[in-house]
Length: 143
Image (cartoon, rainbow, N blue to C red; front, top):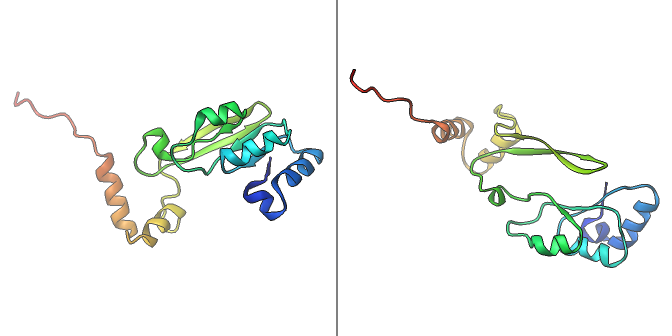
């Protein structure tokens, strides 16, 4: 996959995309449906995946342009909490590998460091995650 976001990193998305396809790229990557649609309008026919977009993507416009869309937000899935979603790119398109609900949870891993930067120390993060995941056990019937 050749990523041609941000106007081909300032070199012209269509120009970079054409060069990448000519060099053997089987997929193109963008970060918006509009970027992908511009590539389609320029006649590029290889598969295009768009990702990193905000919640509320125009799925109809993506489908009309023949663009594959990665879920860009936990909001799109109705999720809460912390997760990492991994995909493999295959000749047939992206394939879900896993949804990791506890990605890198050592004190030095990325997720705890992001929360710490936001003012939530590791110990408090772990406590919140445990509290959020706690399921009440069976209650005694007194028998």
